[in-house]
Length: 179
Image (tube, helix red, strand yellow):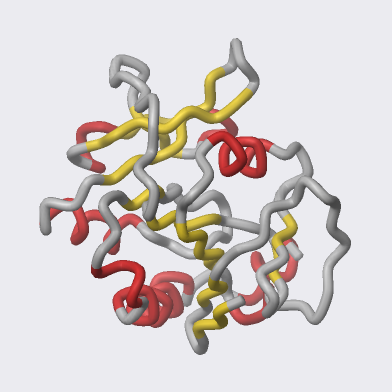
């Protein structure tokens, strides 16, 4: 899947991501979400930074994951500015600076934007295989989960395990699929 994405969207990733942002803006869950929990794009994932910057400009509360090497787990950190609060982190993925404190709780009803290698229309998600996101999601239940992907990442079925947490929606540049 990673190789397919590298071939399919190298020069069009921003334009295709803009279509995805329009679909995100139309999600009813965005309007009343007390917090947005998001991610910074890694390799060929949908680009989110401009969309996140707009949410920050609106005064929205934004949490991003930061890898805690000692715990071998992600923790969530509030940022106020993507320009000043992010630094290259785990695997080179932009993440909140080390001096920013982690959040202890995420309010129920938070809107989670979740990356993945592949998704199904039923909300199943294939991650990168280490379980970091599944453990993060399990530690903060009660959110509305939105898997973000390009259309080529939607597959009819995926292998899954009992601990895999399904998405409530999967959003691509051409469709929004509630579970």
